[in-house]
Length: 446
Ligand code: AMP
Image 1: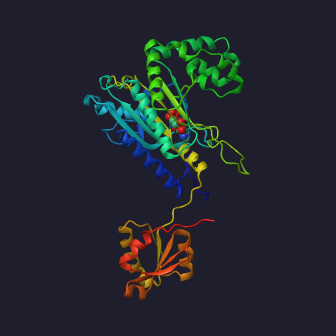
Image 2: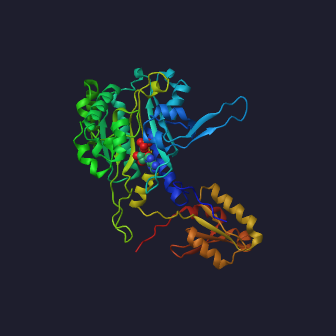
Image 3: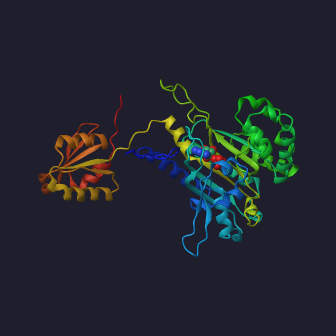
């Protein structure tokens, strides 16, 4: 029989790596709450038309990468429906904003979310078919200040604070403005015109993009096409006065709070809904030299840690009220890869391993473990069927200390505790045990 494996492009996350995932998520929750964001959880699948209308029919995501199926009617009350596993989260959040009439509060909605997304992309390092995003959106009626450049700057500043607090070293913020919907339309027309006489010299993908979605040509990594791409018109020359002033105000606010950025007029993002500010945080770091891959890029060819931007027209495109907004999606898988390259991770040790000295003592050992866990300690429980030597071997791998529980210990209430780092063995009264185990002796290294 063939053994079953996780589907291509998906993977299992195991301990101790999951500790790091929880840490990354805990810091996100902590930082975002300081900015007064609340959590939203939307379904992992939605009506296909949400993404077609929200993300854009011509984007790679919608045209090539979605997991879509026809969900047949099960009961008379249900209709057959085309459903799609969410490839990104903003469309779902804006759908929820409209559905729950959150705009009627008159307040800005500041929502964050953490969860898996699905795209049928070619898997490679840092690119998976199920991947995790930590995203956030600020959306509301214009009267709530949702269009203000201050919102853009605040979101960017929050991201800088998050990456710093997480300890990501060497990130780089690239920023641009793609202008209003009208600016974008004029720029797209100019690109189309500039591409018309030269596109036949470009790769097949770019020839197609030049027709269907010329902005995507700017994003092309095809080396032979770079000369043509570099000579294309610049978005900055197509912004109207309002868009220019908006962008300048975002940059001024970033300057004021010391967030460094690089203006990159070639920054186009893969989703159609963006207006005005768009950005990416990249990480071009190389992994430490190893024999197998000396100095390879940590994120492979995928150097974007996160991306985002404004989507002032998205709510209306989905049939909702006018609700400008700005948001981002952090690639959690890529954050983890970056953090792993910066530090060696080892499994956390339990505070103690409890070793019952006979199988009869198992219930008493479970009771002792419960006591200590209630006191907040991380406890691993052995088994009285183990020989003492085996208990010591396992305990040494999993815990800082071992607690021996024999008939004598149970009767006298004095337990034998051995500290693996110091080699010290002491007797501790049961009432004092939690305290004694909680103390982490400083260990001299070297
Ligand atoms: P996007 O939704 O395309 O703007 O992507 C936002 C971020 O999600 C990117 O900067 C990546 O960090 C991450 N991301 C996008 N697609 C993938 C993928 N297939 N695998 C892993 N991370 C991804």
